[in-house]
Length: 281
Image 1 (spheres, one colour):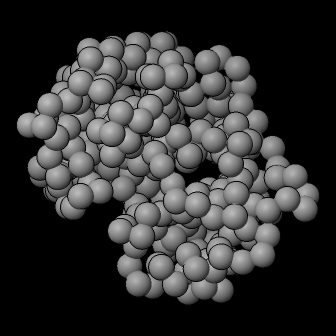
Image 2: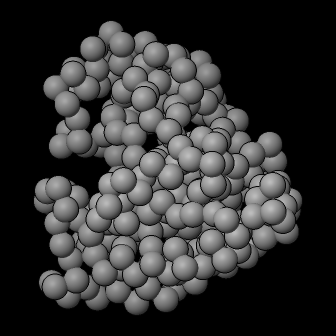
Image 3: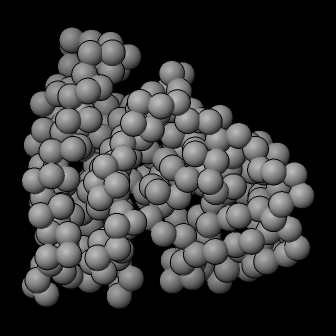
């Protein structure tokens, strides 16, 4: 039981729209008023020049951290910015309480530069399993949702990833080199081959949405942070796609994955990308 009241499934049957409203309100109150309006003092670096945080990130996460546990008593929030301040808080993903995994602004670099290619990501997980996700692109006013076993939707319309067109180069979004080890760089080089068209990724959440929509064939990502992947992994799964690590196993939000890993429109594409990553390693 969750909070001695209801199961995750019962909660989602009753409150999915409430979570959607919370995500929209966080964006409306804390993100969009700062879009293309950021002052210099509202932007900071974390690990380097490509790893930015803004007041929009911090305040949107605080908003969601206050609202979401009230919807689901007994749940906790693991947010990107809170984990940056206290890395030990990430361990909640592996504990017994249901966990909201939050990336308030996925694609902060794009947000800082006035590019609309960012989104807010929320996933609800329990014991390492993602049960539901919300991907909201506020500039586009697009909301993608997924509930385990019930499919994926974009603005209420079912999503189907489909399969790549035979004979066409696979389009694959890959990790930025700044976020890869030497071994991972060698693995990713396996994608530079005939029949594959790799490119640098943007917002991870929007890349997952592109796969679920059949607009992108696959990703090849080299980092595990659950806030970047939990929502999108479920979205791709529920749209009929597949995710695999280089070990040939599904990606685990609890960590310990053999990297890089892929999410793809179908199983054949996922296996092809993993083969190329293994050849390059």
